[in-house]
Length: 265
Image 1 (spheres, rainbow, N blue to C red):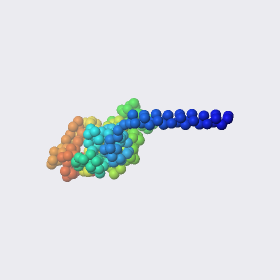
Image 2: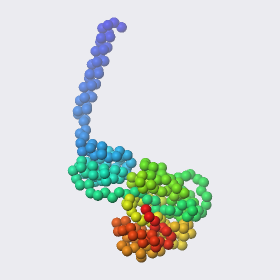
Image 3: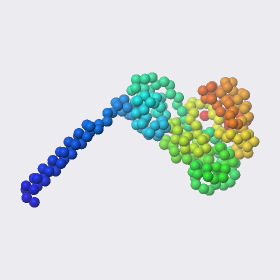
Image 4: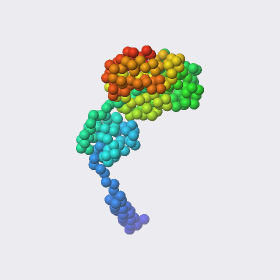
Protein backbone atom coordinates (compact mmCIF):
# COMPACT_ATOMS: atom_id res chain seq x y z
CA UNK A 1 0.00 0.00 0.00
CA UNK A 2 1.44 3.43 -1.00
CA UNK A 3 1.59 6.43 1.28
CA UNK A 4 -1.50 8.05 -0.22
CA UNK A 5 -3.58 4.97 0.56
CA UNK A 6 -2.48 5.06 4.17
CA UNK A 7 -3.27 8.78 4.42
CA UNK A 8 -6.72 8.30 2.87
CA UNK A 9 -7.52 5.40 5.21
CA UNK A 10 -6.47 7.52 8.20
CA UNK A 11 -8.61 10.42 7.03
CA UNK A 12 -11.64 8.17 6.52
CA UNK A 13 -11.26 6.57 9.97
CA UNK A 14 -10.84 9.99 11.60
CA UNK A 15 -13.89 11.36 9.74
CA UNK A 16 -16.03 8.39 10.79
CA UNK A 17 -14.88 8.78 14.39
CA UNK A 18 -15.69 12.47 14.30
CA UNK A 19 -19.16 11.84 12.88
CA UNK A 20 -19.87 9.17 15.51
CA UNK A 21 -18.67 11.51 18.25
CA UNK A 22 -20.88 14.33 16.98
CA UNK A 23 -23.85 11.97 16.73
CA UNK A 24 -23.39 10.66 20.27
CA UNK A 25 -22.96 14.19 21.59
CA UNK A 26 -26.16 15.33 19.87
CA UNK A 27 -28.03 12.24 21.09
CA UNK A 28 -26.81 12.84 24.64
CA UNK A 29 -28.20 16.37 24.55
CA UNK A 30 -31.41 15.40 22.76
CA UNK A 31 -32.31 12.47 25.01
CA UNK A 32 -30.79 13.70 28.24
CA UNK A 33 -32.87 12.83 31.30
CA UNK A 34 -33.00 15.57 33.87
CA UNK A 35 -31.83 14.33 37.26
CA UNK A 36 -33.69 15.48 40.34
CA UNK A 37 -31.02 16.70 42.76
CA UNK A 38 -33.20 15.83 45.76
CA UNK A 39 -33.72 12.33 44.42
CA UNK A 40 -29.97 11.87 44.09
CA UNK A 41 -29.41 13.18 47.61
CA UNK A 42 -32.08 10.88 49.03
CA UNK A 43 -30.59 7.90 47.19
CA UNK A 44 -27.17 8.68 48.66
CA UNK A 45 -28.74 8.87 52.14
CA UNK A 46 -30.38 5.44 51.87
CA UNK A 47 -28.37 2.42 53.08
CA UNK A 48 -28.19 0.82 49.63
CA UNK A 49 -29.26 -2.69 50.64
CA UNK A 50 -31.90 -2.86 47.87
CA UNK A 51 -33.81 -5.36 50.01
CA UNK A 52 -37.27 -4.25 48.87
CA UNK A 53 -38.56 -4.09 52.43
CA UNK A 54 -39.96 -0.63 51.74
CA UNK A 55 -42.27 -1.98 49.04
CA UNK A 56 -40.41 -0.28 46.21
CA UNK A 57 -38.02 -1.81 43.65
CA UNK A 58 -34.78 -1.12 45.48
CA UNK A 59 -33.35 2.05 46.97
CA UNK A 60 -33.53 3.97 43.69
CA UNK A 61 -37.26 3.28 43.44
CA UNK A 62 -37.81 4.50 46.99
CA UNK A 63 -35.65 7.59 46.43
CA UNK A 64 -37.73 8.54 43.40
CA UNK A 65 -40.97 8.04 45.34
CA UNK A 66 -39.78 10.14 48.27
CA UNK A 67 -38.60 12.92 45.95
CA UNK A 68 -42.04 12.98 44.30
CA UNK A 69 -43.83 13.00 47.64
CA UNK A 70 -45.28 9.55 47.04
CA UNK A 71 -43.55 7.95 50.04
CA UNK A 72 -42.80 9.13 53.57
CA UNK A 73 -39.25 10.04 54.53
CA UNK A 74 -39.24 7.22 57.08
CA UNK A 75 -40.29 4.47 54.66
CA UNK A 76 -36.92 2.67 54.70
CA UNK A 77 -37.10 -0.01 57.42
CA UNK A 78 -33.36 -0.65 57.30
CA UNK A 79 -32.24 2.93 57.79
CA UNK A 80 -34.58 3.54 60.68
CA UNK A 81 -34.90 6.83 62.53
CA UNK A 82 -31.40 8.10 61.70
CA UNK A 83 -31.87 7.83 57.94
CA UNK A 84 -35.42 9.16 58.18
CA UNK A 85 -34.20 12.34 59.88
CA UNK A 86 -31.42 12.78 57.31
CA UNK A 87 -33.86 12.45 54.43
CA UNK A 88 -36.29 14.79 56.18
CA UNK A 89 -33.58 17.47 56.18
CA UNK A 90 -33.03 16.93 52.45
CA UNK A 91 -36.75 17.19 51.74
CA UNK A 92 -37.31 20.05 54.16
CA UNK A 93 -40.00 18.28 56.18
CA UNK A 94 -40.48 16.91 59.68
CA UNK A 95 -39.43 13.30 60.12
CA UNK A 96 -41.57 12.47 63.13
CA UNK A 97 -40.70 9.66 65.49
CA UNK A 98 -40.37 6.36 63.66
CA UNK A 99 -41.14 3.18 65.58
CA UNK A 100 -38.30 0.72 65.21
CA UNK A 101 -39.59 -2.75 64.40
CA UNK A 102 -38.17 -6.25 64.26
CA UNK A 103 -39.42 -9.58 63.02
CA UNK A 104 -40.72 -12.09 65.53
CA UNK A 105 -41.51 -15.79 65.02
CA UNK A 106 -44.75 -16.58 66.85
CA UNK A 107 -43.85 -20.12 67.82
CA UNK A 108 -41.71 -21.76 70.49
CA UNK A 109 -42.57 -25.34 69.60
CA UNK A 110 -39.08 -26.75 69.43
CA UNK A 111 -38.20 -30.44 69.39
CA UNK A 112 -38.75 -30.80 73.15
CA UNK A 113 -42.13 -29.09 73.29
CA UNK A 114 -43.93 -30.46 70.25
CA UNK A 115 -45.02 -33.87 69.07
CA UNK A 116 -44.55 -35.32 65.61
CA UNK A 117 -46.96 -37.52 63.71
CA UNK A 118 -44.28 -39.11 61.54
CA UNK A 119 -40.64 -38.86 60.46
CA UNK A 120 -40.12 -36.63 57.46
CA UNK A 121 -37.19 -37.31 55.13
CA UNK A 122 -38.09 -35.20 52.10
CA UNK A 123 -36.86 -31.86 50.80
CA UNK A 124 -35.70 -29.51 53.56
CA UNK A 125 -37.82 -26.59 52.46
CA UNK A 126 -40.80 -25.13 54.31
CA UNK A 127 -42.75 -24.40 51.14
CA UNK A 128 -42.47 -28.01 49.98
CA UNK A 129 -44.22 -29.23 53.11
CA UNK A 130 -47.54 -27.83 51.93
CA UNK A 131 -47.66 -30.91 49.68
CA UNK A 132 -47.13 -33.52 52.41
CA UNK A 133 -49.70 -34.96 54.87
CA UNK A 134 -50.94 -32.43 57.49
CA UNK A 135 -48.59 -29.81 56.05
CA UNK A 136 -45.61 -31.26 57.87
CA UNK A 137 -44.61 -33.85 60.47
CA UNK A 138 -45.47 -31.76 63.53
CA UNK A 139 -48.83 -32.46 65.16
CA UNK A 140 -49.50 -28.71 65.36
CA UNK A 141 -50.36 -27.51 61.88
CA UNK A 142 -49.65 -23.90 62.85
CA UNK A 143 -46.11 -24.37 64.16
CA UNK A 144 -42.73 -23.51 62.69
CA UNK A 145 -41.60 -26.18 60.23
CA UNK A 146 -37.95 -25.50 60.99
CA UNK A 147 -36.47 -25.92 57.51
CA UNK A 148 -35.33 -22.32 57.13
CA UNK A 149 -37.10 -20.77 54.17
CA UNK A 150 -37.04 -17.57 56.24
CA UNK A 151 -33.31 -18.00 56.86
CA UNK A 152 -32.62 -18.16 53.13
CA UNK A 153 -34.75 -15.07 52.52
CA UNK A 154 -33.08 -12.86 55.16
CA UNK A 155 -30.43 -10.60 53.60
CA UNK A 156 -29.01 -9.65 57.01
CA UNK A 157 -28.31 -13.07 58.55
CA UNK A 158 -30.70 -12.15 61.35
CA UNK A 159 -32.72 -15.35 61.60
CA UNK A 160 -31.60 -18.91 62.30
CA UNK A 161 -33.23 -22.25 63.05
CA UNK A 162 -32.51 -23.38 66.58
CA UNK A 163 -33.72 -26.78 67.77
CA UNK A 164 -36.38 -26.95 65.07
CA UNK A 165 -37.71 -23.37 65.39
CA UNK A 166 -36.70 -20.17 63.60
CA UNK A 167 -35.44 -17.48 65.98
CA UNK A 168 -34.82 -13.82 65.12
CA UNK A 169 -31.79 -11.91 66.36
CA UNK A 170 -33.52 -8.62 67.14
CA UNK A 171 -30.25 -6.70 67.13
CA UNK A 172 -29.38 -7.84 63.60
CA UNK A 173 -32.91 -7.61 62.20
CA UNK A 174 -33.65 -4.61 59.96
CA UNK A 175 -37.40 -5.27 59.62
CA UNK A 176 -37.20 -5.61 55.84
CA UNK A 177 -40.06 -8.12 55.91
CA UNK A 178 -38.43 -10.72 53.65
CA UNK A 179 -38.88 -13.46 56.24
CA UNK A 180 -42.52 -12.47 56.73
CA UNK A 181 -43.15 -13.04 53.03
CA UNK A 182 -41.16 -16.27 52.94
CA UNK A 183 -42.93 -18.09 55.79
CA UNK A 184 -45.68 -20.33 54.35
CA UNK A 185 -47.28 -20.68 57.79
CA UNK A 186 -47.48 -16.89 58.29
CA UNK A 187 -45.80 -17.18 61.68
CA UNK A 188 -43.57 -14.14 61.40
CA UNK A 189 -44.75 -10.67 62.28
CA UNK A 190 -43.11 -7.25 62.52
CA UNK A 191 -43.49 -5.91 66.05
CA UNK A 192 -42.03 -2.92 67.92
CA UNK A 193 -38.41 -3.44 68.95
CA UNK A 194 -39.22 -2.43 72.51
CA UNK A 195 -42.28 -4.68 72.89
CA UNK A 196 -42.05 -6.20 76.38
CA UNK A 197 -44.31 -9.24 76.02
CA UNK A 198 -45.45 -11.27 73.04
CA UNK A 199 -47.65 -14.28 72.36
CA UNK A 200 -45.29 -16.98 71.14
CA UNK A 201 -47.93 -19.07 69.43
CA UNK A 202 -49.99 -18.99 66.24
CA UNK A 203 -52.34 -21.94 66.75
CA UNK A 204 -56.04 -21.32 66.19
CA UNK A 205 -57.05 -24.79 67.33
CA UNK A 206 -59.18 -25.28 70.42
CA UNK A 207 -57.41 -25.93 73.71
CA UNK A 208 -57.64 -29.76 73.77
CA UNK A 209 -56.23 -30.03 70.25
CA UNK A 210 -53.41 -27.63 71.06
CA UNK A 211 -52.36 -29.57 74.16
CA UNK A 212 -52.12 -32.80 72.16
CA UNK A 213 -49.45 -31.33 69.95
CA UNK A 214 -47.59 -28.73 71.99
CA UNK A 215 -46.85 -28.17 75.66
CA UNK A 216 -46.53 -24.38 75.29
CA UNK A 217 -49.33 -23.62 72.85
CA UNK A 218 -52.01 -21.02 73.59
CA UNK A 219 -55.27 -22.69 74.60
CA UNK A 220 -57.42 -19.56 74.49
CA UNK A 221 -58.32 -19.75 78.18
CA UNK A 222 -58.61 -15.92 78.45
CA UNK A 223 -56.80 -15.70 81.79
CA UNK A 224 -54.46 -13.19 80.18
CA UNK A 225 -57.45 -11.10 79.10
CA UNK A 226 -59.00 -11.13 82.56
CA UNK A 227 -55.77 -10.12 84.29
CA UNK A 228 -54.59 -7.38 81.94
CA UNK A 229 -55.30 -4.04 83.65
CA UNK A 230 -55.20 -2.05 80.41
CA UNK A 231 -57.31 -4.15 78.06
CA UNK A 232 -54.28 -4.82 75.88
CA UNK A 233 -54.93 -8.55 75.49
CA UNK A 234 -57.71 -10.16 73.49
CA UNK A 235 -58.52 -13.69 72.35
CA UNK A 236 -59.55 -14.24 68.75
CA UNK A 237 -60.05 -17.68 67.20
CA UNK A 238 -58.79 -19.33 70.42
CA UNK A 239 -55.53 -17.37 70.23
CA UNK A 240 -54.34 -14.55 72.49
CA UNK A 241 -53.12 -11.32 70.96
CA UNK A 242 -51.41 -8.34 72.59
CA UNK A 243 -52.07 -4.80 71.38
CA UNK A 244 -48.59 -3.32 71.77
CA UNK A 245 -49.92 0.24 71.77
CA UNK A 246 -51.98 -0.48 74.88
CA UNK A 247 -49.46 -2.72 76.63
CA UNK A 248 -47.58 -1.05 79.49
CA UNK A 249 -45.31 -4.00 80.20
CA UNK A 250 -46.68 -4.98 83.58
CA UNK A 251 -46.22 -8.69 82.86
CA UNK A 252 -49.55 -9.78 84.40
CA UNK A 253 -50.52 -11.68 81.25
CA UNK A 254 -47.30 -13.70 81.27
CA UNK A 255 -47.59 -14.48 84.98
CA UNK A 256 -51.14 -15.80 84.63
CA UNK A 257 -50.64 -17.78 81.40
CA UNK A 258 -50.90 -21.48 82.40
CA UNK A 259 -49.13 -22.72 79.25
CA UNK A 260 -46.33 -20.13 79.20
CA UNK A 261 -47.40 -19.05 75.75
CA UNK A 262 -46.72 -15.40 76.57
CA UNK A 263 -43.05 -14.59 76.90
CA UNK A 264 -40.70 -11.66 77.31
CA UNK A 265 -39.39 -10.27 74.05
